[in-house]
Image (cartoon, rainbow, N blue to C red; front, side, top):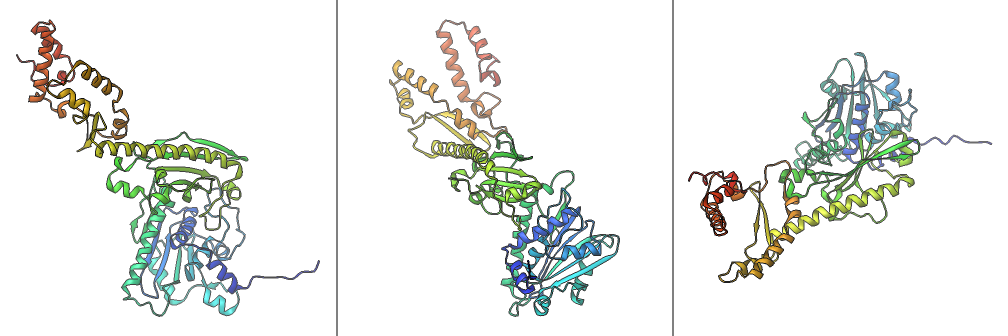
Length: 490
């Protein structure tokens, strides 16, 4: 067959790569992927405001690239010179270019392996004007001055520098434009939150990376609050997918009453509680998707499922089966796996809703109609207390003068037996604090109330035929008086 070479026109190709829909945080995350894959231990993201000449750079101390490797890395959709390593966070070989072109008109990469620095530049204005893929050797004088300033190591590493930033490199943006400057540094804060979520597993542990923005460490964000004692974990499942497997673990987070105000706000994540519920898909420990029900039938975001979060770990070999996109921000689970994910999600959602429902019951018990509950359970000052509700009709009747008939007392005792607030105590109790209810407010010595009650028990035993000595001996071992000093001196 005859044919024609229909090579893509550079200007149109640039426009296509620039419109893939990267957010700024997602684009920078793609650059950090490359740094981690290059073995970097220290990665710095720099945001510097200079009006229309503002710039962003990612600097690492990884193994760097030779000149040939650099040219390959800068070539759009080039075949890698060597097969991808199993730990390579890359996907299609276009991340550096597509992420950069979505944010800037000028991309410069400077890299060194053994103290020899190589520099190449893409200037999209040059590409469009020439109609050719002209990869420039070196950089212009202003860019060279910036590179000299921000290079950390004289021996090895890589600097990716964005200039002519989209939305900022325009004539009406000046250096004293406070509104636009605030927007620029607001993007830096959003990037910090995003990177802390995406690379959380790389920012902790024995081999953690040091990732900084403007010199400040990026703190990892754990969506599962795995270290909190009140988190419920469902059993881990290893589900086969072809010759590989997928690891799935569901977590039910504590409710707001079990977290401090700061912890509750932080646990909501960058997007807030509603948007952060659901599945979290990790590829090689890098978060691909944060908070989604993966389009599973009937699985919608609802407030009552806010506490359900599920970790899914997939291998790089299953990229195709999961439909991982260029931006590494979207996945579609394999058809054979969906029933298993749905089953796990249904269980997690049910337990999350149950926690909130019990919390609602506790709120009703605490703030609702005083005539409804025979027991009153409270948590205040890190102490749980449990009291019989003296406003309850049956309790009030038993306490009224002449109202303590045997029938009323028997009915009250049976009611108290049947309504012991086990659920309320379990939900309200914190396993990591010493909040167990203590008799008579935890006093170690006798007070008037404890003494009066002990006296009445003592008199009741005397009336029942025990000697004073036997009655005192019985009180001595009777809870809670066995823990209170002051009854046994006489």
